[in-house]
Length: 251
Image 1 (cartoon, rainbow, N blue to C red):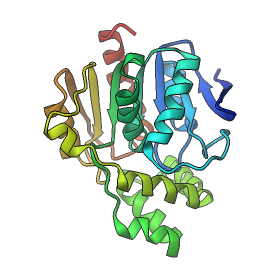
Image 2 (image 1 turned 30 degrees about the vertical axis):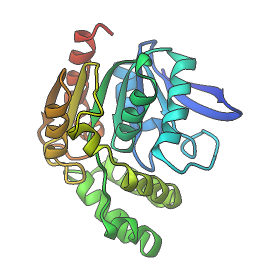
Image 3 (image 1 turned 45 degrees about the horizontal axis):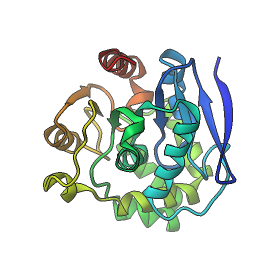
Image 4 (image 1 turned 90 degrees about the vertical axis):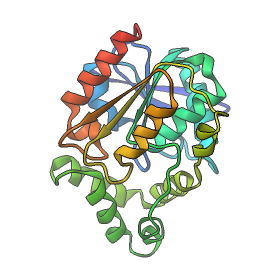
């Protein structure tokens, strides 16, 4: 049974979903919310945040991934204190920034379907303003390996949240740590698991191979038959990889 938890961060109400007590902290992707992680919360445990403007958290002005990272880091401190931080797509960008902001609260990182740079196709970014339905369909065709219940659910979610989705993708489009990794300015000093769906067209395998190359204590897991929404599409395989890593780092 999952529990809904609310905390206060500088007067902003932040909502989280909680599974069994475990030092794992999940950060969702663009236009999504904590429910993206229900399969993981149920099987593995931990906390999943609704970033501000998502789910049951308050609406606030956010102008950068760094600002999301602030709310995430403060929420982590007020719940588990320290955790393995699991971030997907936008959430992966937030996780990287959270680590740079507060490395002492990150026991390890799990970067899922994300990148050191997250450029967004103009057809999607501009399309959300002009022809949202067409843009959402294009995005989902690149995010799922096949259509099904989760695909249709995500389609309804995105069409209900076009403005938030557009904001999130705009922030992703401006997110860029690529050169910081390349020139050694950015060093991830905790164990890191990198997970990608083999058929991911939004954040392809090469993005994750880049992490594996530039993060010293990292391992790369490629999940067949899955695309960008790997934790929904192949949750059993995803959970096995995550659980194995958590045990390895003693969480």
